[in-house]
Length: 273
Image (cartoon, rainbow, N blue to C red):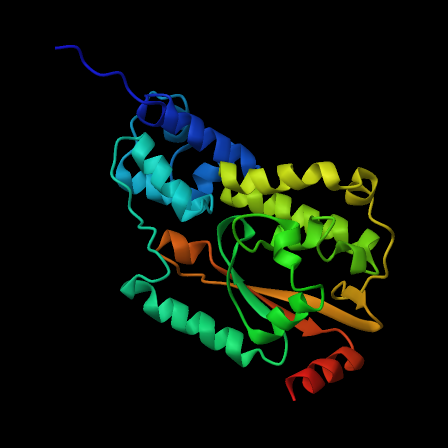
């Protein structure tokens, strides 16, 4: 009987390539990673060159040290011939109930200010009423205009028919938002993470994206939105689940918008009333 060929994910060179790629992505030398992970540099070198086979515990130890997302840790395990360690439960899975209850409480308690829960590739999973009202300010067909199978935060900001035409300080905030998206895509990896910025890039002014205007050194840079005579000044705080043991929970983030001035706070309070 002919032995089946190995798939790329389980070929002998797959794990060494993943390890080396993530080490370089985190800008660590072999020595630095070895010291942080508590292994010898010689053994780490052997792992990267495929001269030594990693144990399951070693894979989890190295991926934890490199802060590899759980989805990619599964890829490491599979590449080395082990079963995945982490599940990717759906939002309706009973074991995700406590997590989603916490998310709903956070979104509700943040009212009267907008807040949204987003998953992988910036897709919006849940939003509170103030966030939906903020979207309605931009037109009832907003999400149709920006496209995509799901409501997507990147498309909301960077699509020409999204919020961009109404952002007063776009030249200041756009480079920071784009840089953040690129870093998130690099941190989480995956074709879906790279696809959204690549799709939106042709519609961007590259001079704006890569050359931020000089801004005053303030604790946060507000997002100033003006539409139909109404001006809002907001900044964002991001929360994640630091002890997640599920792929879906690991990729889940809460983005809470806060008023950056008293006028914006008063406006949201009035809208809630």
